[in-house]
Length: 428
Image (tube, rainbow, N blue to C red; front, side):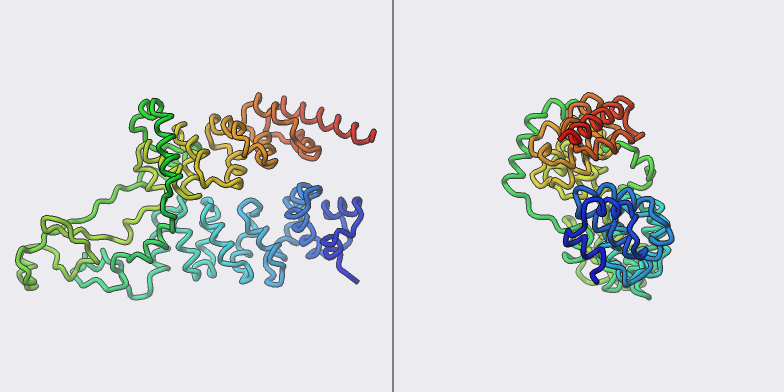
């Protein structure tokens, strides 16, 4: 006899049974119940929202058993490890479950908050996954001591960092030298070369908003929601490359002469780049900045160009820029995806101007999830939310009427519209 989940996938269950399934009320084993709920949450437009709500409050023991079992279907594990659905008490079990892929862990590491980072660094499996650790190191919420700990986990035993070897007056091993092109690509992330379309977009935007840009002057990056304050000013050090004199004579100085002169011998330096006037600039692998640090040192024009030409991670940070002309530039980016706009529409840590600008783009308003997220966002201005409510489906109106985060005006109108639609449906 076919399992219930197989019947659901084949659309063989009647509507009332599907509703029971979305409420977790079917008489099936606990593991299959979880599998059914996840399937509905991901693939069923009618009962998906109900299934997601059911899963959010599902029995913790049953969820923990599924999260710990390597035989649990990947779809279920991926759902639980997703940042949108993650329950803190399931995280340790998910991290240690060998069936949870490194790719899913890397997605979590990119946007993990403080509590999640702490749990991840305590996981024995996580500490052995160098690829995931490298991604976690780019997380803007990572503390300096945690970044140093990750450096220690990523460095092979017995290999010191270049700067440490130089301080000790010893030759830097090859493994601690300044990163080559491949290592730089892994650390900084591969980016496509700017196209003519990107350059035209930047030029047009800068020209159109020249007055606003001039008014902002050199205003620094300040995130809505206080990311900079959360991390602390010391999180954004401005690191200058060390400089040491290079002898005019090509002959290498003796060790004794070097010691007397008080200079660092050339052999003790990490891989170096020789500049003009006999100056050697050292490159410490720890001087590479993560995305948030790079953004922090850019002026308004620089951040606008990055918003228009940068990658997804850079846009996700710049959309929260407190400078309006920068945040709005993200919405003009040629590479901006619908998924990103869906996220922006639901965020509470963006400027009101961003939420007002989204509905002005016809492309964005064709996406139902964007509309729904805007209405359900408590930061969305009431007048804008009221105008968009007419586009919501019946179930979303019902959910909105019970959403305590939005204003009472929105809730009351949502309830009224929900009742009207239900009455209309019953008459038919």
